[in-house]
Image 1 (spheres, rainbow, N blue to C red):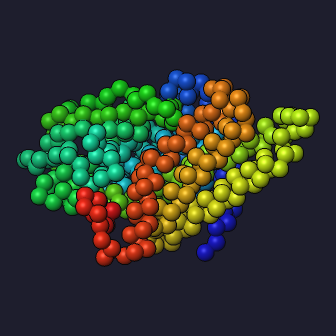
Image 2 (cartoon, helix red, strand yellow):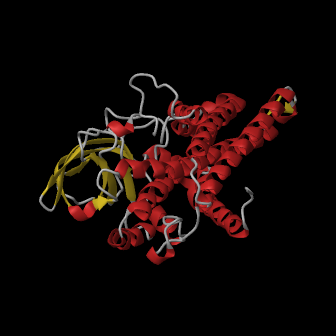
Image 3 (tube, rainbow, N blue to C red):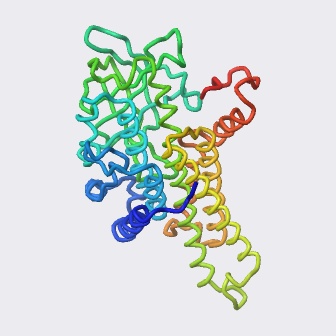
Length: 393
C-alpha cells in the first residue's frame, strides 16, 4: 500500500491550491464575518468538477476516488475550512449516499444536478435531542398510500440554508429504533419542509448550518433512498468514507496554521532575534510538522483501504480523531506563537483556531471515535455500559 499521490492526484492538488489562493483567500475574512459563501463560488467549484469528485462520469461527475476527495478537502481547508466543509458534505455524504444506495432513476435524476452545482445537497441525520446516539432518532415516517408522511426535527444541518436537496433520515419501524430507519431524498420545495434560520456559530461560520422542521411532509414512495429500514446501515457505511474526507479538512487546517506560524516566526523579532531562532519555538514547529504528517498518513491509509474496496471503520475513526486533535493542537499553538496578534480577528490563525474545534465535534465526536476504535480492538463481545450505543455503530 502506497500513500504517494499519483500524477492525476498531484495535478488535482495543484489546481485546487491555485484556485483557493486566487479565488478564496482574498475573501475568507469577509465571508467569515458575513457568515455566508457567495453563489458564484459554487458555480466556479462546479466548473472545476469539485462538486462531483466521486460521482460516476455517466452521471456528469469526475469519477475520481476517495483519495482524490481528501486532496480536495485538504487543499481547500488550507485556505478556508468553511468552503472545504460545504464541498465535503455535498460530495462525501449526499452524492456518496445517492451513488451507493440510490436506484437508477434516482441517480439519473439527481447526480447530474449535484455534480453540476445546479443543486447543492445537505445530509440530515442529527436531531435536537439526538447527537452521538444518532441511531435513536425521533423523526417518524408513517407509511401511507403512495408514500410516507414525515414529522420531526433536524438540527445542525450543514448546507441546509443553501441546499436544494436533502437526504433525510426518519424512523419507519418504531419497534426497532436502531434498525428501523430509512433515508429519503427530499427536494427543497417539498410542502411541509421548513428551513430554519442560520445558526450563529463560533467557527466554520461561512458554512451555513440550520435546523429543519418536518410538518406532515408527504413524500412519494420514489423518494425512499435504498431499502426500507436500512437507511441508517447505509449511513454508517457512508460515514466511514465521509469521515476520511472530514479528517482531511482537519489536516488542511493544521497545514495552513503551520504555514502562518512559520512566516510569523521568521519575520517577528524579540530580544534582537527572529522568533525562529529560539529553541522552544523551533521544537514547537517541529512537533506541529510531525503531527501533521502523521495525520495525513492516517487519512491516506483509510482512503486507500476504501479505494481498494475494503472496510475501514477503525482506520476512519483513527484518522478522524487524530487529525481533529492535531488541528486543534496546531491551530492553538499557532495562536500562541503569534502572541497578542494571534488574538486579533484580522489574523488567519484566530479564525483557524475557531474552525478547528468543530473537527473534534462534527461527524462523530472524539469520544465516539475512541469508542469505535476500542470496540474493534476488544471485539464485539466486550461488555457495554448501560445506555451506550449498540456495538455495531
